[in-house]
Image 1 (spheres, helix red, strand yellow):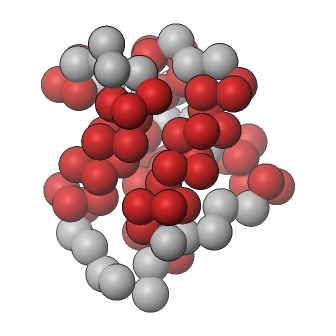
Image 2 (tube, rainbow, N blue to C red):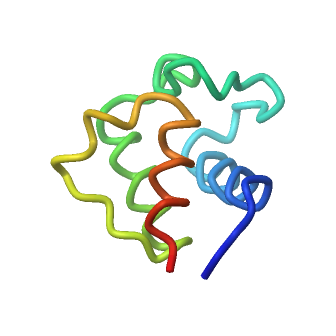
Length: 83
């Protein structure tokens, strides 16, 4: 599945909205640390990553979690692994 950046962004924000429904997607700066912007604890963050896996079918290795800081990081990661 190939997807453009807008589709990936929409999908990621949809997953995020299921975990943090109070978040306004337009308020998210994709270059800033996502967890801090939306006040996600570690369990919420893990659920977000699992949700991305389920939505996009991309395995996110636990060893890569530390490099996924911003929404841009997450989108780059998913986009690079889509088949």
